[in-house]
Image (cartoon, rainbow, N blue to C red; front, side, top):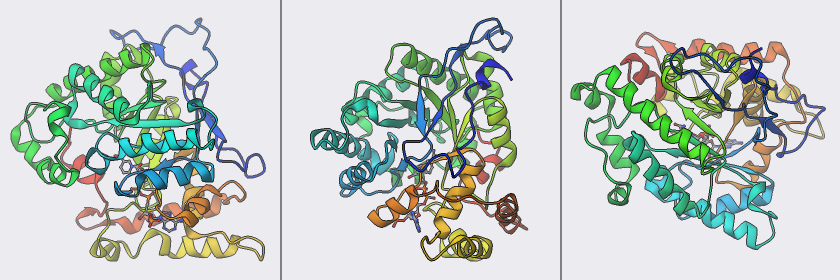
Length: 387
Ligand SMILES: NC(=O)c1ccc[n+]([C@@H]2O[C@H](COP(=O)([O-])OP(=O)(O)OC[C@H]3O[C@@H](n4cnc5c(N)ncnc54)[C@H](OP(=O)(O)O)[C@@H]3O)[C@@H](O)[C@H]2O)c1
């Protein structure tokens, strides 16, 4: 096992841990020889990882800016110590609310110190490039009211899908995410004709900004999101610090991305699964095509019934979260409901069998139709060889 893999650990067995504080160590960033893309020589001892990330985080996408502050505070009260947010969430309003919730939690003594909370935020794709990314992080820190984040992530490998010069974050404040999603179709980008190598270059400039943010302590770890194997391999060629701590990817039984998960884990990159409950962007038509929502699918419901006892009901949502954890993926489920916050946190007191895992993973077969994979957002981008 290479040094960068050394910190990789499996999710604790049910008997070992019952707490939201149960953590995965992140890999240490090591200098790499950029010209050869090789890891540092093996005689350099790997330092013990000092960055620990709780296996269960709290997702903040689509919390709604009116409710985000109260919801994040409630999550901290419930015991969550890992908050996943992004520059763009809530049309750039969520980070501010997350920051206020953290301040509330400190003031009310719900957490004793900032260091108790693992905060992730993500650089937005309109700000690719060294200068723009650095500004983007500074703005995120200002909104969060923090001196550093525990993890700073490149949200998407591609730059703004329309080929237009990046705007300054300050001028961007009034644009809603909805507007951006409409403008930034991959087709618009493909038409604009930005080449693969131009995009790879821009992405490597962003990574350089991330390396510097790590070196100067504004980010305790740096990471990527929505990266394919090819994105990772290309970025490694120009990186001076490697590997990214995390690759946060869409990952659920309809889209398990098994090859990518295995690749990342072999390389010592922690996989964070997003949309592990099926996500929030499905339409009725999509679910119908897939044969139903994940939480209503036969194997998930059957397994939850089988594992339930008179003392303890195991819900379909918990089965899906446990499926992700047992694939050694960190999870960041989002819920605005207090009951479901507790439910999603209670995933360490039961285990799925190998048979259960295989049965659930087979749901992927439902998700591949005549038109290709009937999946949510990542697949159309792959088909276009996006970025
Ligand atoms: N890197 C990226 O590009 C990216 C993309 C998407 C998401 N993410 C991150 O990943 C997080 C999670 O993904 P997601 O928010 O898309 O989807 P998700 O966590 O899979 O699903 C959230 C949805 O499930 C519902 N829900 C939550 N817990 C439930 C339970 N126990 N039983 C039944 N329903 C439940 C929620 O509704 P209620 O709120 O009503 O409970 C919400 O509609 C995001 O919040 C965000 O932080 C990252």
